[in-house]
Amino acid sequence: MSAEGSHVADVLERIGRGVLAELEDLPDDVLNRALDIRQTNTLFALATHLVGAGEFWVLVLAAGREFDRDREAEFHASGTYAELAKRYNAWIAAVREVLANLGQDAFERLAEPPTAFRGSLGDQPMTVRACVLHAVEHSALHLGQIQLTRSLLTEPRREGAGRVQ
Image (cartoon, rainbow, N blue to C red; front, side, top):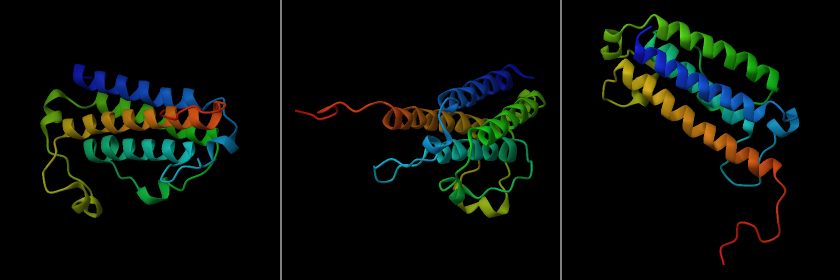
């Protein structure tokens, strides 16, 4: 594994394990509970989207693997922590495998998006490096959203908290 591949794999694994740590002690009804805030997602949906995007950006775009993704369905997904843990562990293992076999020169190669996604990714070609770095950025963003959503769902509200005077 190149040093770059190893580093990216470490970061994605740390983010993925962080998601699992945030969710592991929550009952499934909390994982699937919507906030009373417009345009928010359940914890399960956020976690499903994060891993779906991670699979797409690393396994499909960087490694050229086949993957059947329904992005819109990710935002309506529901299920159990056990299902998420199984998918995250498989994703982390696959990321390590892909990046272990990705030599330094491969990071400069242009990614070939599947035909169905070509228009949605813009007109500019992306290198494999750009794809895996986007996976890191996107995953970190959604980990933060998961942390915030968990706080909103589980921490008791104090009278007057959050109001600007």
